[in-house]
Length: 156
Image 1 (cartoon, helix red, strand yellow):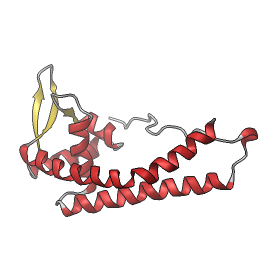
Image 2 (spheres, helix red, strand yellow):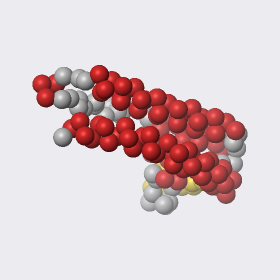
Image 3 (cartoon, one colour):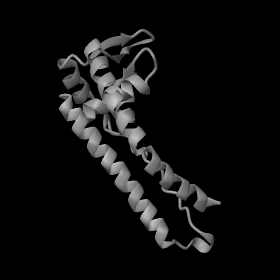
């Protein structure tokens, strides 16, 4: 089956002053925002590795728990949640199943589909990682809030 040509990212929207001009402060705010995002992602990757997971495995656990329906996620859901190709998601699910982080079961509504759910081990790993991620976000919140308020003020 050919991969989907569907665009998976949102187009950028310009937030400009009157006449479309950019202020020097706009560049600084964008640079600071990207720095904060990258800092959080670096923290997240290191935390996942400390827990014995790859960053992608951590993302998959979080997507299955936080974005999927209560009855589980399909491999297609996981591919969409992680912005990866279907065959890459299949390989990821296979590796995670071998680690006993997830389990598979047939979809009761469509036996052709397989649903993926977290195992108790997967739940424990995700809970531990999520706690420290929320702590990190709480620490970063004042700085991120200041940057986002600057963007919001600019739109008025």
